[in-house]
Length: 519
Image (cartoon, rainbow, N blue to C red):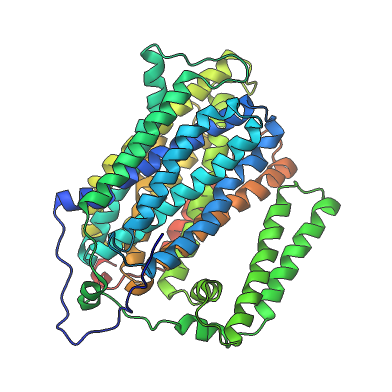
């Protein structure tokens, strides 16, 4: 991708102005691409285990194959954020990455259902999953930054709410499309080793929807030039290279601590009888320590213009608001990953009376979970457009997020205390409100608090606090449940409720400039 370094967004002598307010059509155009991105993510999340097993993977192989998704986001988003902050060409600043990611993701979606025809179908499917997830992340990260680029701070809450509505709408469409195909007569079964037609056509339709939605945003949105951005009153300037120079003054003590902690976790797995997935957690901590040490060494040697030192320096020099929101994100996404792993089996076991996947009752519970999870996403779409803007105007963005997280915690608590499956709809409504807020409010607060010249890299780094809790839950929760609550997954809902309550309390430490009157 050809790129031209964007001029530093330093203050100009021209009078400062505010960004023009975007119309409803402008807000739609800026975020419509996320509708397609979410279709891609949901098709991936809903069908990849089925595809892997079709081409020969065992149940025990699935966690190792699935680790591609969070790891890819962890690596790709900060890199794309760093690069997009420095890009300016005829397509703009963020749009070149939208288009690149859309093209690669569409190709991946088209090829994925064809995996069985290749000589090594499991290897081909696993490689395509890495490519698909990387491509979706290449497109997704700049979309978060684009809202901050294009909107005045007074419209940030509305802009991210519109983006959330498209995310939720895309999730609903992708979830029900295979079912609609089956109702239309498309076969949902296939001979051993082949992908059902419902999955094939869902992926191919998803490729068209993804490329079309992102293409719409690329075609209808004109990004502000670096010169225009520099004249906006809320374009907080930050000297280029400041984070690397700050990094050059740091010692190697912190990297050594991370390396030591990672190695200690790895060495403790066998003696303590921990799940093997915890090896990944230790490896990631040690790898971060090594990369930090390398980045510090490069900064001390005077090599300021390198991506690794810039990213590590920006991570260690995060603004205070971002640090406080990071804790909120950690608890928020820990609960979400617990939900995605355990909710289906819990509904079958505790609300329909069967933990055996071979029984009709278990499958009835699984179908009910799929339905009410769709309700959650539908509620999120409506809440993003109606409830969140109203709450934000009334209470401010920070308190709005606190309220929504507490409502979501009550939704998780309902799973723990209720036993009527129909009442779970109420729980999903409460969780849908929280889900809408999680996708909107932290980004609205962040975009209003960051230096504009580094909006992309900070949005990419913010993703770390989504990925790390998912990896932590994936590696640690199994050991906790095995040790304390074997065969009783319902306790995970209490963990999730407590996690969202802690996130709500953590939000009380977050302040947003100009919202003191809402406190």
